[in-house]
Amino acid sequence: MTQTITVIRGDGIGPEIMDATLHVLDTMQLGLKYEYADAGLAAMEKHGELLPAATLESIRRNAIALKSPLTTPVGEGFSSINVALRRHFDLYANVRPAKSFPNTKSRFPSGVDIVTVRENTEGAYIGEGQSITEDGETATLMQKVTRKGSERIVRYAFDLARRTGRKKITVVHKANILKTTSGLFLKVAREVAAQYPEIECNEMIVDNTCMQLVMRPEQFDVIVTTNLFGDIISDLCAGLVGGLGLAPGANIGVDAAIFEAVHGTAPDIAGKGLANPCALILGAAQMLDHLGKPDQAQRLREAVIATLEAKDSLTPDLGGDGDTMAFARAIANRL
Ligand code: ATP
Ligand code: MG
Image (tube, rainbow, N blue to C red; front, side, top):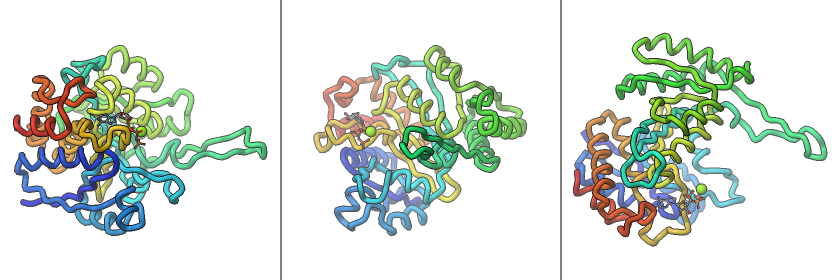
């Protein structure tokens, strides 16, 4: 069966890493069809707007998008196109795997395999806060936590664990201090956990979680948490295993899902063939999982691992002297 996906080539290093990723996907002969759509600076130049209606319509129709990083120019009415996309499609689950890979000069070249599931629509990020005195020297911030929002994110995490054979969930919170907001999240998480008796459920306070992640990251499997804590923890996890060039992410909603690299457009190396395509390639692996092709996703991840192990055509950020496309070809050759 053919599956059509929306492909957004993006800005900066975006087009290079997307070409590399599609080369790898083409090699796998999965019957994927690509529908190209523009967003970001590329869309501004071609269509005079950052997020054209045709792009939103393409994602809505296909329900799946593979997206390169985007530039949001200042003063164009958007604070971030990525955030606009998440809001438009109510992509409530931000899913970020962090796995040890060989030859990456990371602190934990083995033993780490953590998926962070971050609530993406509420918590501390519902607004930017406000100054409450005229002099602007006192400011406050509102947080919103709902039963509905908490339940759907925790359920997503448990379903993900069940589907992918993961055994343990850690619910990360600060309910001892933030008794109402974090307390509600924890209460709902316990109720959901009771419906998944085969999966071990732990609770951990966020500060302790940070220490434990740095000291003994191998104890974690799936982490589920609210927006702000998830933002920080998912970057911490990426740092444990080798940083930006290898960190993919997915933004998942009921009607659409967008798969991407966590890093930005890296304008300093754009157009030079220096960009590491792995983060987007691993984002494509997450997409294959989401499309119900876990065997193909695994096949793709194993090809990436084998290429790293062989140090075949790695990009300069990994200490190699390959370029973006040579790295992709080395991965494709192992498929
Ligand atoms: P943006 O404003 O779009 O976030 P940025 O300059 O902050 O762009 P990031 O992608 O966030 O760029 O990354 C910071 C630095 O990390 C870049 O300057 C680049 O040198 C490096 N980097 C990021 N992604 C990659 C990659 N895929 N391969 C190699 N180096 C990368
Ligand atoms: Mg950046």
